Length: 333
Image (cartoon, rainbow, N blue to C red; front, side, top):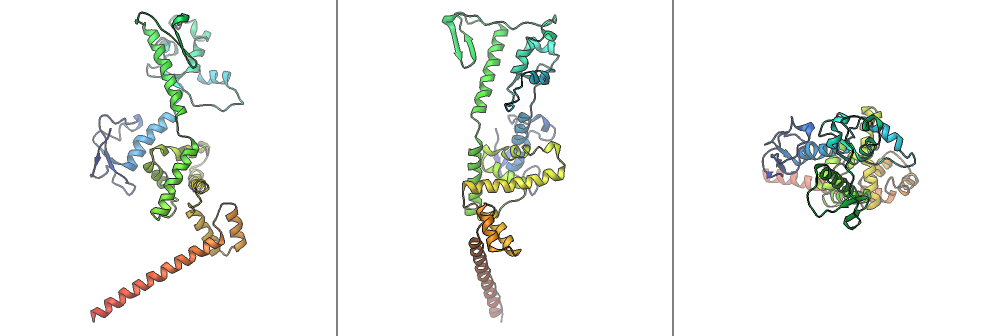
């Protein structure tokens, strides 16, 4: 779908990271980016994730049923004691296009498709066609879950039967896709592995910028694409100001570090900085240890050990600098 190249990303900004990918005719460009992302462009991994992968995920996640009475049907069938699930959408059946006055590419959910056939606002219209019932032949019936398929000696099916078969098939595929989705616990484990590598192997400090943090996770593991966005959606951003939403994103970054530290105690970079800040601010050893017991900081002993290590490194650095200055002066004269 894409090729690697050594050329510069089209956007050529400080955000550019990762391999360069060229947009080809086979690249599935989201409809919202058709005008800005063109075939032939070269994008780095960061911008490819942002404009291609993440945008497609966002459109799919926010897709809604186009049926004009969807909300009415939903309220009639809603069980208030259960959480609402993501809709399984399908292309509107051809027999209902003129009845519902929808575009042939519009999608409706299975609930609305079933409710329409029972709704007198639609099933009495002249252009309405009833669904063709499946033939009952006990010797030629196959049941898969909630779906029933009839086998026939002749392989010729009419158009409506084929469309019904395709609709049922797409519904099964959608259910399988949901069931195979990476669980939250596995996403946290994957995130922890990335943050552990950054801290222990690459010696990197904690990243507090939400966009940079999100990009690092998504570039390192494709299963984490959209993970941070899902957490952000849980903060109900539509009802909050831009300033509050930006603050919540920063809080989510800290939350991710704390979740990772619960999974792996050696991911403690942010806790070390909190402990060091508390000690510098004059907090007592008891206060620091109390916060450490709550999982919000490292212990006072760890802070002291990190401080001694930092001072030792600084002393070694000063010795090296002094030696280089002396050497330059000595050999100059």
